Length: 212
Ligand SMILES: Nc1ncnc2c1ncn2[C@@H]1O[C@H](COP(=O)(O)OP(=O)(O)OP(=O)(O)O)[C@@H](O)[C@H]1O
Ligand SMILES: Nc1nc2c(ncn2[C@@H]2O[C@H](COP(=O)(O)O)[C@@H](O)[C@H]2O)c(=O)[nH]1
Image (cartoon, rainbow, N blue to C red; front, side, top):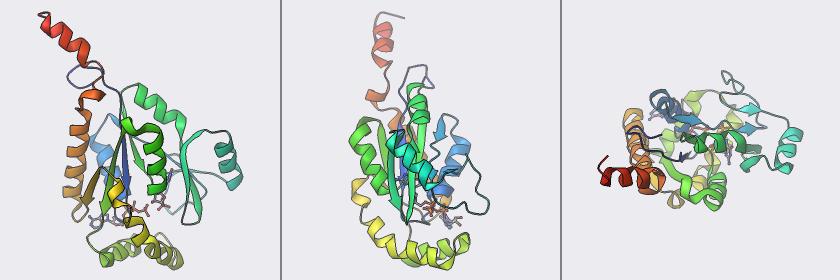
């Protein structure tokens, strides 16, 4: 249900960027202030970082279990990123959308391409750019959660990742977290009002025109 009482189908809000540009930071802040938005928690074969919580940040699984999920087609999309496998479980996303709740995804361009193929109408995609390569490297290092070789591998892939910017509906430059957050919220709020998402609009207008 929309805030003004008109039924609405949920939307899928995708954030992608080169590693370290700020997707996780923006996602956490967005979730704090958007009660009708929920995070899609991915499964991954990547080792858990210090501070990461099972079921909040990821579902950490073995390569064998990941393979089973792929074969049983329980993932909406999946990809190999920086040598590990990542995927989006279908069930929670479908339940949320059907109930009119929005779902936030922190996934890469390969996953976004798969969602475009299967769910274009429900999708709103945002690419987040860092202000500079130097600042991207500084952010990856000061996060201090990955060993040096992992940081180097992610920096080496940054240019390739950025090359996908034009496949996204919106592009936001993450210089200042508060400004970026405000821009992402503006996109979300406008997209919620798209006519095709407000599934109860026809009925509402009919009643309005009848004098209700
Ligand atoms: N606008 C910003 N200004 C300064 N630092 C920032 C900004 N946005 C994020 N950071 C910092 O940069 C680091 C990387 O951010 P974050 O983990 O959110 O990136 P990410 O895009 O989710 O990375 P990954 O793809 O590897 O998961 C964090 O330490 C975060 O606090
Ligand atoms: N295609 C998918 N990409 C995903 C998913 N979950 C995360 N990601 C992307 O992987 C990289 C690395 O993430 P990190 O947590 O190891 O830093 C980043 O670009 C994420 O957006 C997923 O389910 N599918």
